[in-house]
Image (cartoon, rainbow, N blue to C red; front, side):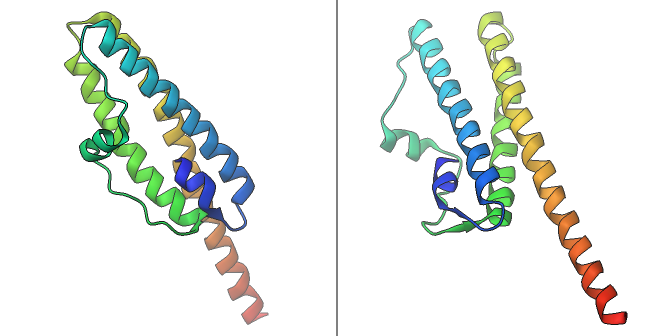
Length: 141
């Protein structure tokens, strides 16, 4: 999300830039809370980027400037996968109500960001339809 925040270009730059910073903040807070809960349960938490990257289920995004449409598409897919992993974690932690409740709260925040991304995707598709209809209308008038 931070990668996209820094490399966003196009008409939707400012609102997307701000939104991505907000989501990144949620992800930083979430990862910190997870790590602290792991340590509280006497399990070591890795903060090593090399280990985190090696264990990631997500592929790296290209190092280039990204349009709003590309960002929304990529991050909708990625956040969908992440929320699915969190929903599985809710079920997997049912025997530990504190952890399960914590993961439920995190999932709520992530799903809210996902909802906003999906709406942006819908808005961009709708905007394209409106623009195409206007262009056709101008051709025939």
